[in-house]
Structure formats: C-alpha cells, structure tokens
Length: 273
Image (cartoon, rainbow, N blue to C red; front, side):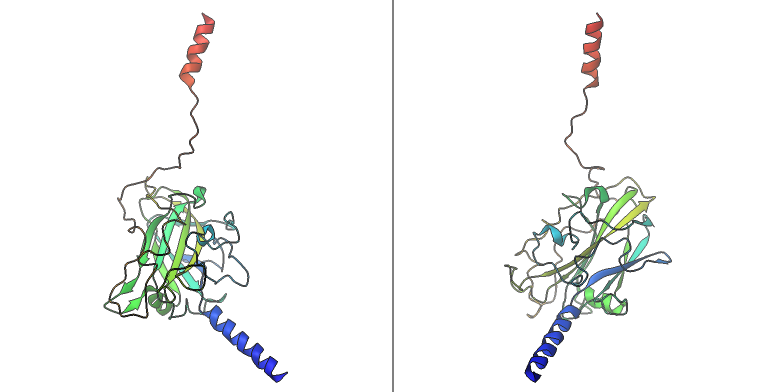
C-alpha cells in the first residue's frame, strides 16, 4: 500500500511539474478596462488541458487551440486602431502565476486577421514579434515573466475598421533541437485567439499568410537547439506589418459571378421591339 501511495504521489508531482510548464492567454486589458479570464477569447481546448501546447504546425487546431475550428468568443472587445491591448499569459487560471516555465525559451508573436475569415486562408498578418536579445541574453518569455505575464501590443493605426481575430503565440524551443515527428520532440505552440472590434483606423487590410502553413517542422526558427551555444535567433514567419505596408484585398474573393445586368437589359429591349 505504501509503495502504491508513493507511486501516486510521484505521478501527481510529475504531472504538476509538466502542467506548470505550460501557458495560455488568460485575459486582456484595453485602456482602463480589465477583462476577466476568457472574456473575448475563443474557448480553450479543454477545461483541464487548457495550457497544453499544440505540436504539429500543420494541424488546423494549432491556429487558436480551441475545441473546434468554429469555436467563437462570447463577445468582441472594443478597441481603437493605434491603441494598445495588454495581453496576459499565465500557467494557471489565476493571474498571479508566471507566464511560462523559464526553461521553455522562445519567441512571442502576435497576429491579426479579419474575423469574417475565421482564420482561413492567407489572412494572418504579423503585428508583433520578440525573440532573443543577445545583449541582455533574454528571451521574450523572460521579459513577459518579468512583467507578471503581460505584454503590450499596439493595433496598427491604419487598418480598416471592423472585427478581427487577435492570435497570440509563444513558441517554446526547449525540445526543438530536432523536428517534430509525432512524439514529444519538436517546438511547442502556445496559441490563443481573442476577438476584437476595431474602430477608427484607415483603409488597410494587411497582407497575410496562412496558419497553419506558415511554419514547417524542419525550418530554421522552428528547429533550434537551445542547449548548444548560440548568439542569435531568427524568428520564423514573415516580417512584422508596419503602417504603410502594402494592403491585401479588403474582403476575400468568393469567386461568385456578378449578375450580367447589361445583357439582361439588352434582351429586354429586343423583346420589346
């Protein structure tokens, strides 16, 4: 009996350590409004496994780590173009926990896409990234942990007003010395998506990339050995969108044909004659 109890305690300890190494987007703060956990954030993938990562960069569920690709937030949070949203990552449900285990070295990346796209297609524009600082020898996750799990993100001032998905992401590289092949090795993706209603702004819808699709299991930045000596790190994916960069289409092309009004009118004139 004593051996069984010891085994149980060991398993609990191991699970607790594993769970504490993970993270999730807990809440948002816009202006002076502090939102509660999960408000304006698409549902977590599980009530118990909400902080566990995605491993396969080709899996559509790594987009937002939701129970379904069609999962929606309970509401959209209002924000003005050009203003800041404070995102808050935490290991547990409480906002006093750190963002992520310091051993999970890696970059922080934030993306934006029109809500009507539901994240499908080449719609994701990168609006923030922070990786490794060779001067301070700190990763973005170190900075976030130092700031009690928070990070300020500026919404581009020139984007078209409307509803958007805001995808926050930490890529943990502690197991990324070799590519993901279906097991525990490979980078870990901690992504969640919030829903925002952006007012003001301009006429730009930034050009985007597909998620999944932007990362490959064997590409630099996704494969990276944090145990070997290094002095730099290149963040994967496209460059960060800057105000004034080329715009993509304001709405996805559905391929629907427009009605040929001129021909219909000509036919009606012929019949009248």
